[in-house]
Length: 342
Image 1 (cartoon, rainbow, N blue to C red):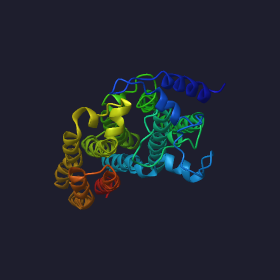
Image 2: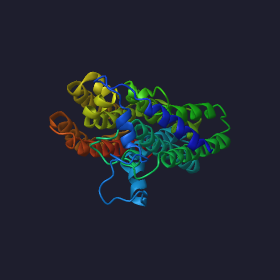
Image 3: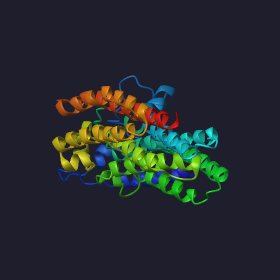
Image 4: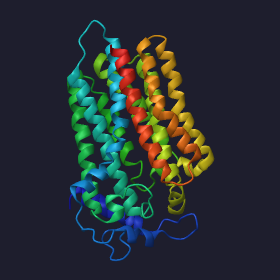
């Protein structure tokens, strides 16, 4: 039995154990129904094939979340160039950092698909259908793809370690991969205890930005630290919008996200805070880098996103806010990175 099969077997066994939900009833029946091996209630649309198509796998990668990986690398690379004004920058290192970030993001997305699917959390999902939860792909297949992307991130991270000679970065990379898995994986996933936003802030904000700056200059400056806070907060906003959309289903499934813990009203307010505070950081940097003011154009996406979240009456309305928040992250990261570098 290969590692993917072994992990899949353990996770499915845990899921069938029937974790209690908010009503005190077991979720085991729902989990089995969401399992593609189940004959009834598999969640597949009529006429759907048992085999996932290329489009299904692309959807499972959740490409719309990739700006959250691109933004910190772009910003961090620009910050790193500031720290080496008299020396050449290293485009190959920037590319490797981007591969690490993208592979981790896609790996997390597939890992979430797998873990939530075997638990039955995605049975009544509002957003795009998941591979595992909808039954179009076997859990072990989704798990294998997730592990493959984590392996790709590890290889790219190892290459960065070799070219920089900073072997301690291996430990940082290992922690990032472990944290990515246990977001929704394992027996006690911390994403089910309101800590998801902390994960994305740390790893897709501070660590990704500071790390991208470090591999350029072997130093981390103020631009990288503050910029990392900005992109990290926007990443938190994206996750908050996602969890606000699924708050009703998550309550039933026993998934205590931050949106579930604080309630929809406080969650909406937090979304606006996460989206708007980063622009105070832009205003500060604009005093040092005049072209940074151009990043304020990202408010054309951020403000409508806040308005939608604050006034939305149905979960589906939040899908547009998610897209606008991801666009904000992309413009923010690339814009500040260019302001620093040029």
